[in-house]
Length: 279
Ligand SMILES: C[S@@+](CC[C@H](N)C(=O)[O-])C[C@H]1O[C@@H](n2cnc3c(N)ncnc32)[C@H](O)[C@@H]1O
Image 1 (spheres, rainbow, N blue to C red):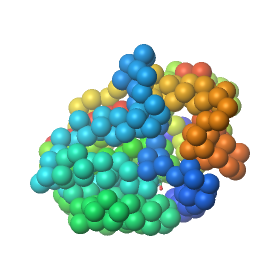
Image 2: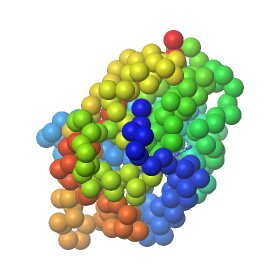
Image 3: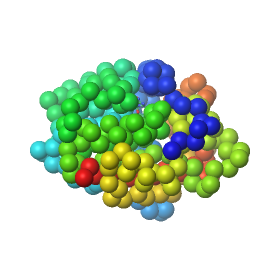
Image 4: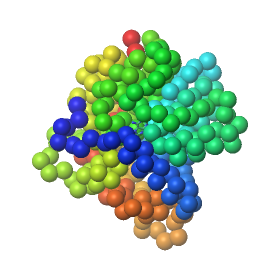
């Protein structure tokens, strides 16, 4: 369960936030088809941030177990990068939804440019109330989107409804790794307020999935491979003169609300990777 003391995100406002971030990124040349953290397999991996972002989608693909006959829902699809990668690597059909209209415009444009508009369709919709019939999808992916939704239980129950029996859900979410402290690290506060998010409790996640009708297959703490490493990489880049504009966080987060480097070394800010199945 989400800590009741946390301010719950409002979907319409989250949509406006991502509209603004998307337009800013387009205007200042920092547009990236992935709007998520990276995944570094090992502590000594030398993968760039961009390669690690694609790797995170590949970690999802390994777990989704889909092929050319599958229909995948990308819940909180961003500007479509991960969904298009699923199409390219598996041949599956993807329907993506985002609460940001600007992201949806960008995602459909990217799908057309990639010649994949017949296999990837992106729609403006709120994940809190899905309008797909029961059992529509073979798999659902949710890369870093649940943290913006006001009720994880409601969303996961909806996900279970739209999955076919045997269909899989793969997700990442943020959580506080140690028992919640009385005073949270200010970097976590800035993340939650600046990016309109709440943190989950990993201990509650299994019950949360089960209460939604899903059966857990795997839950991993991937903090070292993801959030901690990203904050480290960004902090390193901040020290480099002449870094590419796309990797200058001050370009992306122009409103000064939150910067990934606010979380440098904050190892109680965790990331979990969960795979579940509709029985
Ligand atoms: C951190 S971005 C991740 C985007 C994408 N999954 C990726 O990995 O590139 C979070 C996404 O969740 C979407 N989102 C947040 N709340 C939502 C809601 N209530 N309904 C639909 N999408 C939502 C945002 O619009 C955004 O696309």
